[in-house]
Amino acid sequence: MRLLLIQPPVEDFYDTDIRLQPIGLCYLKGAVQKYLPEVEVIIRDFHKGIGNKLAGRRTLPVPHELKYLKEYYPVPDKSPFSTFFEYFHFGASYEDIAKEVQSLNPDLIGISSLFSPYYREALKTADAIKEVLDVPILMGGSHVSACPELMLSHKNVDFIIRGEGEKPIYEFLREFQNEKKYSSVASLGWKENGKLHLNPIGENFSLKELPPPDLSSLSKEHYLFEGKPMRFIITSRSCPHRCSFCSVHTTFGTKYRRNTVEGVLNEIKESYQLGYRVFDFEDDNLTFFRPEMKQLCEELIRSFPKKDVQFVAMNGISYISLDSELLVLMKEAGFTNLNLALVSSDKLVRETTKRPHTVEKYLQIVQEGFALGFQITSYQILGLPMETLDSMIQTLQFNATQPVLMGASLFYLTPNSPIASGFSERNEADIFLARLTSMAISSEHFEREDIYSLFIITRILNFFKSAPVSKGETLSLSETLTLLETAGVRSQIGIRLFQKLLEEKILYASTSKNLISLDRFRYSVFERVFSELKTITTLSGGSINLDGLFSEKNRISILSSISKHSSKNSNQFCKFLTDC
Image 1 (tube, rainbow, N blue to C red):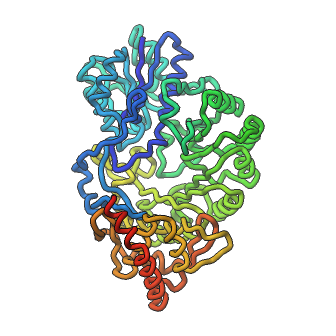
Image 2: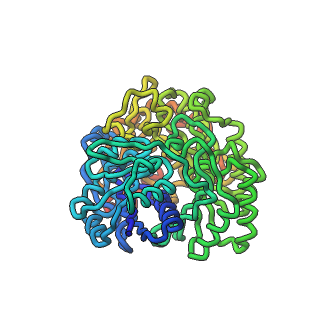
Image 3: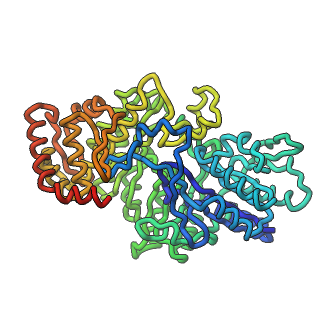
């Protein structure tokens, strides 16, 4: 028997391809080959392409549900403050997918539907396959767990699996090949005479029973981090926290489980022998069990004395479970980045969203992490329904004074997350809009223009944070602009647009022909953020003095300084616009 497992393409304004290695499918392949070795399992990542051919992207018309975004993403902006513009299909075409599947001629196909806004792509993949091949299709993934009836009711979906998939797919394959008593398979959804059946969700294998994920179907060259082959590592499942905006428990349940240190270490060593040099820990809570994490770091230090490996955790680390000793061990082991989820500096917001985190702990980890040389990215959620504009501005200002790159996560309502229970029943279009780019959730506390403006202001702040101001040094805004002037033409565009923002109270996008005003950007929000912000701390630890930015005297001085820069570089700037 041949089982084909598929990761479908993605359609959106942007793509995070480095974050979409199909590790879940690799776990399924490993489990099936351990417990049913007679079944041949093939994985195809059609988000990446077909075979050794990377698919790239092609432009699509913006879907009618997202047409309202044209006013927010009107032109291709070449500035460092840019947001989005075109809508793309990332991955192989549905026609090419159908041809490839037909050539493989599988007996059963499993399609992953991980993210709710991209469920249509999973269904389109099923439709394209059924056009050329009459083969049963099974779907699984986080979105299937959140919206099982929606997926199983589709005409070209024959089975679904809710929750974790390794044990259910093993039990399903046994029935599929033999007596087909599907009612006995826990976590399975199936159809009989047009009626949908959802079996109760059952227990998965323990992590100790699971073999490591089998990545043999994937090309290392397709998953690179800073030019080096990268693979995902998962040491645990679920999360002990209960943050209301998170849906992790829908798939992984509420029981937090961790693999053994020995098991994780062996997996990393074996992958190192295969040529992988970067390992991205994708746990939902990597460091909750600190003793085990410290032991793992100590083993990594001993196992890789050449320091030719790099460890990251792009899915984020809960700073509440870090301490000084663990930070030192992580740095020595080869961790280079800290991705932290601040969410909000407002205590009331943290309590409302059930986050057991404190600002004091956050500051400790940022200060110690920066001193150790970590590159720190800190994420704020913009647009939580219960949060006020004042509160979001407070968090933005707070993080502007820390030596962190600021990540803005625009809130979207994940189906079946705890916070979703406070909303009316979500329909199919609402699920499609559950994406960062849509800015779809409204609130009595703020408008879409406010969230859009804060998103861009985060980019403006990061623009200044990129200035190479030495640790312990404080520069005026004019002096900082002189430094940024040497960073290239794109930086010079940023300087010019910032000048016009101060001068005209209008933010412009920079296109290949001219400047276009972004009418949905609210200068009043920008002024509130910057007027109350005394300093910006750069990524290098220096300070930019903003005191009195909006006083007439300082404003004239800054505008004069910027004008001098613009005039000096006007020829190079114009050439850049012409070449774009």
